[in-house]
Image (cartoon, rainbow, N blue to C red; front, side):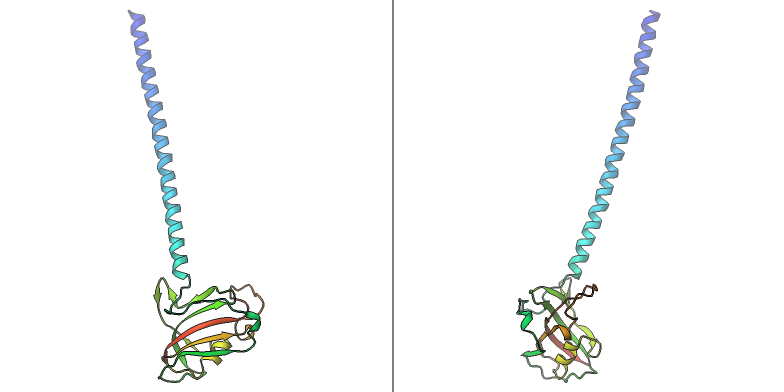
Length: 182
């Protein structure tokens, strides 16, 4: 009978040790799974934030009825100003500050900049003496309330060669809605 008790004790001890090992392993696995879940959640949260930031900063078409279209950049040799809608307000000078909605695209039809951020069109204020020459020349003489299309050769935009600053290269087209001349 002593041997039976001894064996029973061993079985109980082995079961206790096995239970301890099993529960420790289970807790470790749960902790690792939770950590991965947390890491994945953090990674997903970062990916979501990055996507929101990209969407927020992505240029969008701010003016209904106008779309970006590809154009022959080689044929753009001089500034061309087309009045799409004539305003009746104050006339802009080279010293004026204007508040405007706009979008601009490159010769391949890609929109590269816009006053539409996050789906909200918000006019931007800028001094005509502080922008690219094509804007200064093209908007001088334009009346408040006007919408114009500027086709700008490379030398009156950001240039014909990539300077590595992220700005577009070559001729550009802008649709600009002049909300206010100050």
